[in-house]
Length: 170
Image (cartoon, rainbow, N blue to C red):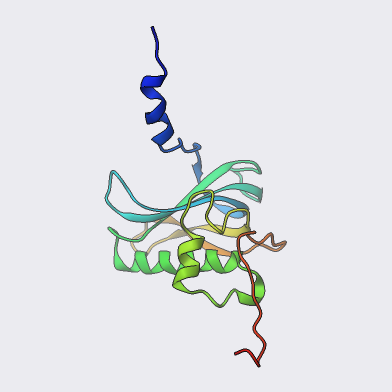
């Protein structure tokens, strides 16, 4: 006879299954961030940040509003220039989700709370604009180039708090 008690602890301790998502494709997209996780890949051993979201609007011919999408920022195991580019793009993502008056005040603590924690990451719930353009490398290979910025109609992440300091307090 089946005994669920044999499995209940394992189920409770298991990582939730991820939603199947497509890679962000060519086009200009407004994405609502649904998850952001910093981790080391089990298969590759690479450090990475995975950004997950839902397309709110797009001009893409292959994707549409409501599609679940993802983007991976590799932070190790790739060429140094790619790591640098991914670091710059992550900073752009975080800046795009901050309230505008503090978007330039990004500290290591802000980054840690922004891009880790899955659905609890501070950037979740924010809308960002992503432009993915097909380009050709010097070697003749095609690739997608990504730009991340504040969405025109901004929904900032609800986890950010802004405190103002007067000159007398500074």
